[in-house]
Amino acid sequence: IGPITVKDTSFPTYDATLITSGPYSENQLLTFTTTTTNVATGTSIYWKLYGVTGVNALDTADPGTDKTHPNSGTAYQQWGAVVNDLYKELIGRYPDQGSFEGWVNNLVSGATTLTIVRNDMYASTEAQNNRAGLDQGSFTIGSDGTGSHSIYILPDFTTEGTETFYYRIYSDSSRTLQKDEVTFSVADTSVAKSLISIVQFELDSTIIASGSSTTLRWNISNAQVIRINGSYYASSGTLTVSPTSNTTYSLYAANSQNEVTSSTTLTIATAPSSQNIALGTLAQNIINSGSNIYWANFSLASSTAIVLSTEHSLSNVDTIIVLFNSSGNVITSDDDLGIDGRGVNSTSKISTTLGSGTYYVAVFVYVGGWSATSPWVVTGTAAYLDTNNIKLSLWNSNSTPNPIILNVSEPTSVNEGDT
Image: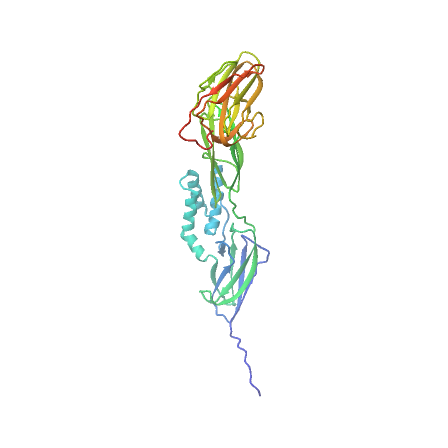
């Protein structure tokens, strides 16, 4: 009789299986079962999930749902969306209601800032512990030789598409003795936070007469919070504004990962502080000198066809004329002899017929780069000139021009964008 080979049936075996039927998606409870042979009841099996792109796996515990603030105001709802996402992104779970409301209340009241909230959440003990091993754990083998546990995959807001995960089990707590592996894919339906884009944040007119109004327009993409001068608004909209003094409108936009700011200033031009001019009369020393806005006014006793124009021989200088009625409303304007935006080194001219009454004229003087759109939204570099050779003329269309010389002085500095 030859040698007899005896098979060793006491060698332990491990077979890990994902028993939840696919396809798999975020926020789905996935249950894994490990079947063993020759493994003692009560033996600990150590698992770890690889391929995790963020802190986004929860062992067994139901992650919950997004929370809603009881105050339905826009500010509370916008900041609520941010706080919900911060919990998922930084801590790896949905918030509890009490903590959620506390963070939101402090953000709305200004008691804290988004930067502080992010830093506090990231530095919290829970977040640190989660980063150290949220995607791993252990379970024990029962008397039937099996053991199981479940995992939630939370939205991570860092990738888009399908993510591949590797579930591995080990017989030692240091996770060096791997016994089996399950590969599976999860459809990542979360959207990565994009940088906030200010598509539009501007005034229809950056300068208006006292008592007039203009429209502030905004369109902000990828933001969860939109705040303008302390009030909260939808991501796009318009606002009619009619301040009595120069006003800056400040935009703050944020999502859980980004913050941006912008501002635009509305200047109130006071027409009554102007030099009176008359047809056929030479006027000098236009007031408001030292600014790049010059005002004049004139009165007509009856319907008259008039011409307003500027003339100069200065290099790289441009003028814009704006004509107002006595109520401060714009009648018309001209940049470059009727062709808005043609360029610099240009003069301006308005030809129109006006009824009896008092009218105001604003002359804008620009040096270098600038832009203008009809009727008069102007931006550029202010010019303060030390010469007396920019002339404003008012005459009857059938008569000879009689210029009005604008006398101004040069300041110590020139401010970019001063309008």
